[in-house]
Amino acid sequence: DANDLSKGTYDSYMLKEIDEQPAVLRRISEYYYSSEQDKLAPQLLDDLQKADRLYIVAAGTSYHAGLVARQLFEELADIPVEVQLASEFGYHMPKLSAHPFFIFLSQSGETADSRQVLDQVRHLNYPTLTITNVINSTLAREAEYSLPLCAGPEVAVASTKAYIAQIAVQAILAQKLGLRKKIAAASELDVAQQLGLAANAIQTIVDQKDYLEQLSHDYFAQQNAAFFIGRGNGYAVAIEAALKLKEVSYVHAEGFAAGELKHGTIALIEEQTPVVAFILEQSTAAHTRSNVKEVLSRGAHTLIISKQSLAQEGDQLVVADLDERLMPLVAIVPAQLFAYYTAVERGNDVDQPRNLAKSVTVE
Ligand code: G6P
Image (cartoon, rainbow, N blue to C red):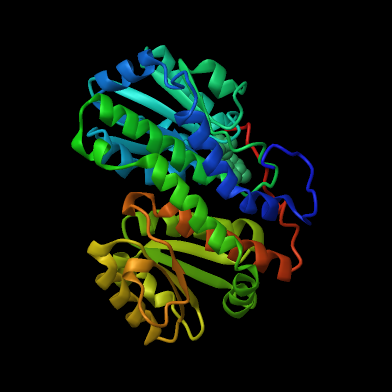
């Protein structure tokens, strides 16, 4: 039960929260779709409709969820989007569009960097929305509008279920905005159905724990560095995957745009360096596969996570197909489990990694 605050039969909150993800997606659908009263205030949709650009402001894993949401808003709701790190935006505010709308993404709703930006833009009288897991948090109270993530309390420091909840809630919001704006792409995508498919696909992954534990052992446990590559949404997932591995296993990990490898980072590839590639979109699959060949020929230990319709013989993990814009919901889950099992094998405290806090209330 995603609302249960005890670990139950689990050794760690992190694994419990990874396992809760199918239930979280179902709960989000239930909350946003099947209740009588629409959870999105008409005034919120009005203000969004008037905006000429969305600014998504966040930190850490929430920032990575914002990167995934950009394409959803741009395509389903036909609005340009900028995704900004709160700690940068606060001090180097870019030139804003004429009618900006600000979305603050925050699991805790307490991140000081984000609060500081919210403060600034409220003084400029721009409309603001906080999407958060803690409905009575500071960011939720201080923004004009707020929407819940419905993920249930997230206790482990490394964020897992809140990440997929942030993508799901923004997909719903993007689609509802697009429907109101009569954007064809919004009526062509059944987001509720996609979330159901994603829940099933995640269940299939979390049911393969023995295999994921084995892969973690073979690829990461003895290594000092690991790389994650992808393009488009695969790149967004790659940097979140790398962050998970860093946070709990302390293996130095980086996510790269697959096309950038040849511009410098390929110099880091040594014999047995793990390189995980995400093959999630048709338009770039061939290019990313050729990047995998390049690192393979330099000795990398490659691991391919592909979606079913693009899978090839030999791919280590194949995940079910969703609409390409929503593939990160599913593709991140194996990487969450790599981080978890690698940390366990290395004897780390997975729920309370060294030097990290669940929410950071200093700038
Ligand atoms: C901390 C946490 C991260 C989180 C980030 C942003 O650094 O350790 O897991 O992604 O803050 O937190 P927020 O609550 O604003 O999403």
